[in-house]
Image (cartoon, rainbow, N blue to C red; front, side):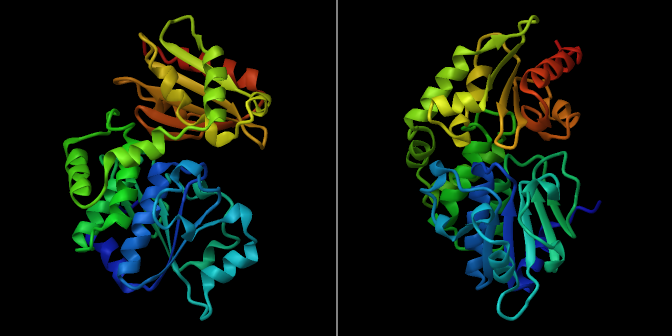
Length: 335
């Protein structure tokens, strides 16, 4: 379980010429921002680079530069992807996996992982399994975006807007607009450098937080109308079914941020958001305040994340999953 040094990762970037960048399913701002920033950094080195993700790019991030370069595997044939990966000269590229605690998190993208020369794992989750041939895991970093920025500085990259805007997006979304406990003095220092180099905070915030569709507001209203507080008075929770999404003419992207809303209730220490997925499983998001470690709890269900923000996915009937998760959470004796 080796964690490589920063210079070893940089040397690998400089040594090889063909790269594929990927990240986890259910893409978020850190995943996308980090991918796009690293894409621009590697292109400065005249490298051949592809970005391939399982899931479609969420609409709110389409303002970011170079999003047209992202390949969505769920909308593309495997033969096309494999041909793109191997290239005309059958070179084996290096696969760089960002913001993923294990390799399975990237989903069903590649038919054969042996198509790659090396796997590079760059992450900031403490639950990371060190699955790469090269691992650069920094749990104290606010986001993978912050890690990518530090690599870019060490590489003397030209830090222009194609890098600053995605990285600022990565940091601001993964820190909850600098509200979460993963925000440090180093995080603010990086943010200041990004702003100095071209990132405009209010423009980025407007694109992410002030560009809501009517459907997302309707499904938020549904979630809030079904909000419940458990018997301890410390846990808030709500759930969204496929029927509720259909009634609001909403999609899975529209539920973003609901769990943070229900954590804001006075006196609540932990918020839990349950959502039925298209494949009939239940996606669960956890948020907490202070020292309540939801990452530790999510790992019991095969998930993970950060101390104050984590998640997991469970197969089962929604009502049964809700009952089971809440019962186990109350048994933690954390209140």
